[in-house]
Image 1 (spheres, helix red, strand yellow):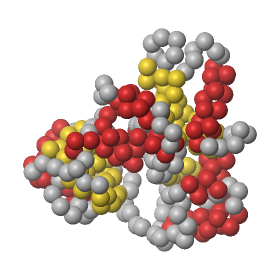
Image 2 (cartoon, helix red, strand yellow; image 1 turned 180 degrees about the vertical axis):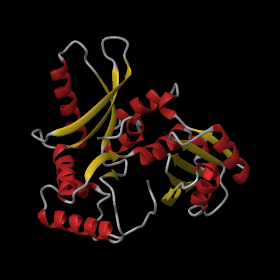
Image 3 (tube, helix red, strand yellow; image 1 turned 45 degrees about the vertical axis):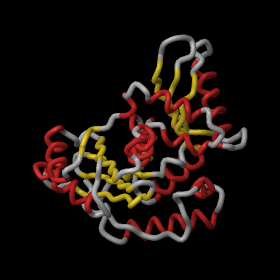
Image 4 (spheres, helix red, strand yellow; image 1 turned 30 degrees about the vertical axis):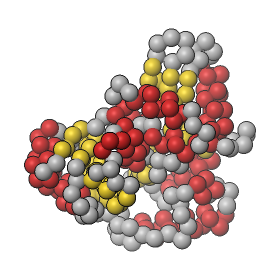
Amino acid sequence: MVLRADVYETEADFASTRIFDLPFDRELAKMFISDLVRALTASNVYAPAVSLVLPSDLPLVATLPLDVSVPEAERTAQLEWECRTLMGFADDTAMSVLSHPIRREGAHPSALVVALPQSLVHFLNSVFSHLTFDIAAIDIDHFVMENLVRLRYPKYTSDGLAVLGMFASYCSAGVYHGSVYNGFRIGPVSYRQQYAAQALHLIESIAVGPLDNVYCFGPGYSAHVGDAMGGLLHTQVSRCVPVTDPGAEEIFRANSRSDDASVFDVAAAAAVLGLA
């Protein structure tokens, strides 16, 4: 259960690609561990496991073809090679890769793929293990969903827009006004019957103007909560499941043809899988 959310500044930008250097840069690793310990010891924390949230442009999230004519081991090796190539890593870089089929017909089905260097996954697991935590997930759900919403519904991105992750015990919210990102917040949900009011309070803590659309995802959403929030905000509130939209695969494919690996963050594989 999320009881509170605090923000701590770090000396290095661990939300950038510098995070890939953690397993190899001793000084950077010391800074990361020091900042992490400071955040964990700032207040009493009693939990057996933690989840990490990474900006969606750090893991590779892509749509890749699968060749069903080759054995599974070779297919896995091929996916790892493609992920290394797309992320610009050396040929001997081990990758942690998850894949999820999105089109099974024919000889060349497609799959959503999420990948990170295995060294980073091992480093994060080792650090948290020494701190007596287990990593439950390396999660990019919210930020991937934000980016996919903005690409899936481009005609609305010039307006006030909020993306709301709704879960049993907490909400996550990101708010945009046109091209300006107002920020991200996480807040607890203490009373299920007051979910709409608590989610609204979280959004209003970020928003700097009126909202034209609020897109919700996650198991905490219900039509009743959406209707209540819409009435309070006087705006359109709807559940967003873009990965099931008929045109979603075309978005994934269009971005997989780009030369810039950073654009692969628009796929919603993390919204389906996470990276455990």
